[in-house]
Amino acid sequence: MSVLDAGPDRAAEGRPAAGELLRFVALGDSLTEGVGDQVGEAWRGWAAVLAHSLAPGGRDVDFANLAYSGALTADLTARQLPAALALRPQLAAVLVGGNDTLRTGFDIRRTTLELDATLGELSSHGAVLLTACLPDPGLLLRLPAPLGRPLARRMRAVNTVVHALTARHRAVHLHIAELPWSNQRRLLSVDRLHPSAEGHHLIARRFHDLLSEAGHPLGPPPADRVAEPPPSPAADLWWMATKGTRWVAARSTDLLPGLLALAAAEGVARLRGRTGRHDEQMARAAMQALASLG
Image (tube, rainbow, N blue to C red; front, side, top):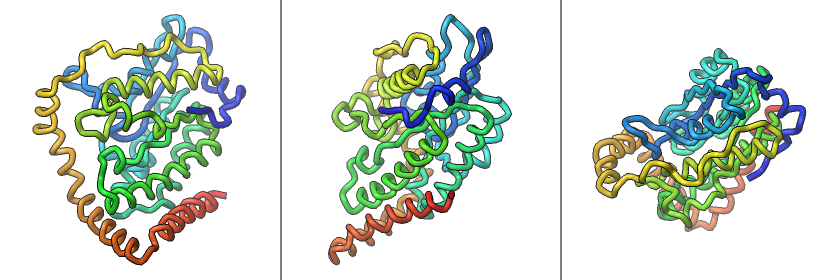
């Protein structure tokens, strides 16, 4: 984990005055919505856990989670950003990009422009930003190479863009991709794509550490252990049968044909020894998208 150019002056901009309410908004997709961390009938998620630990001395935190499952970077700009600006946040989390990589019409230039617009607007209105690079979904799902490699290529491009925009907008950045998802299975939920309750708490603790290192006055960090017991295997199976399968099916109409096309193209490239060329083309496209920002 790291702070990329947060700087003491930039950090001070988002600090509320003594006795002032701290306004925190979270923008993003199912990761920030809290999928995998269910409390009662609702998702909680890392952002809500972090919100409880942000303000020292019992000061109130006004927290709004605007994230929703399936959101793309374009959805943040069009739908979540206006709502976030209306709340005048001092702290704003912007974690997005994974769903972009799962779409047939993936365009790293559009992803770059949309994300830059969202971060730029929030930053220009005085919000301290939280960003993160995301893990490769193909690796989490253990997809075979013909399916997993194209997704990994796209995710690397998105993370390259996120790192560059983090520096551009002086955000506080967490390397979520480097957390031990593969080595510690308990950090993942039953769908293997979203964090478990313990995984969400880990993300919240790491962001708390980074904000503290950047000089923000905070409350006590989130607990090391999740208060609620983990769901039983039967509860996990029930969730997958009643809700998880719908989540997958809703995306398969767009994702599955695209993945099959990507896998076919990847197979041809491997036979011709050109997989490295595809990697280079995607990396070059990411750099060109960043260069177009000026």
